[in-house]
Structure formats: structure tokens, C-alpha cells
Image (cartoon, helix red, strand yellow):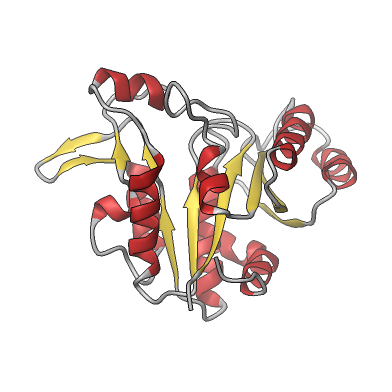
Length: 233
């Protein structure tokens, strides 16, 4: 049986998709599910003797069990410049395409795990090539989406627009996760009430500020249960 997959989208860049994805991997493992993370496209990578390596992908690998057999299975497209992937790829005379991403996803699926957590790049419509946006990945892999909402001023608009776009693109919004990226945000409870009213999807939890993914995993038990109940991809 193939593992169950989920795509981690975000309302913007820098709102904690990797933190949420790692916390979810730990939550799945705490629920006795074997789970592996994947970051198909990453820019801002470090040059190492083994090749370009991305900190977000490394974090996902560290949180995974089973771990990908090769780094490239987690992160098939790694680019050096810390800019939009379509620009970073052009700098390296490369182009992001979907077949290598699907091949890497299938390679992880052969590890006989229970779940694959695929982290996106930037927001839902971030360009990954001249012709592709980040939304092409979950659409091509037919993955339901968990939306990470960075809790800060402006998140109500960003979250509603993202949820609307996810559904308009024919993807299932499985649920959403709040991430307290701004510990000084005014009226966080009132914002959460409005998000619950407007997103029309379950809130799987709110991740506290300043904790580790392992500590945050307890907040995502509902997300782990929802993934357990998915039909395998």
C-alpha cells in the first residue's frame, strides 16, 4: 500500500512551513506512523562537498523516520541563490519540472512508510519556473493541503485568499495550522476566531512561539489523525 501524502502550503514565505512540517512529522511518529518529509524545491542552499544542501530539507530529513535514502529524494531541486526559485534556477541555467519531483516522491514512497509530508515553497502561487507555480506540485501529486497561517497583522486576508485559491485550483483543504510567528501580535484570540469562521476547514492546532518542533508536535495530534484517515495516494 502506498503511503498517505499531504502538502504543506503557507500564506507567505517566512511564516514557518518548515517548523510546522517538522512538528507534523514528529506528531505522526508519536501516533506510531512512519513519516518522511520532502522539500521538492528549495533556494538559498549551501555549497558542500556533497553538493548544494538546504537547511529546511535537512530539518525535514532529521525529523523523518524512515529517512530518504538520498538527499535528492527529499530535495530534487536545490538552488544556491536565496531568491524566488524561478530566478535562482535561471541563475544556474536550470528549470524546475514536475517529473523529477514525482520520481523523488515515488522513491520516498518505496521506503514503506505510512505518510509523506511535502513542504511547498513560498506561498501558493510562488513561481517555481516561468510556467509553473508552487500549486503545481500538490495538483500533480494529487495531495490534500494543510495551510500554515503565520499569525501576524494581515494574516486574515492572506489566509482567506490562500484558502480560496487552493479550492479554486481543485485541491482539498484538509485543514489549517496557526503559527505564532509574532509573539507580540495584538488580539490573537480574536484573529483565531475569525480564521475559524472564514476558512471553512478544521484548525488542527496553533503552534506556540519559541519552542522546538518536537515540543510543538503535541499541538498537531488532530492533523496526524486526519492524515491517518486519508485514502492512500
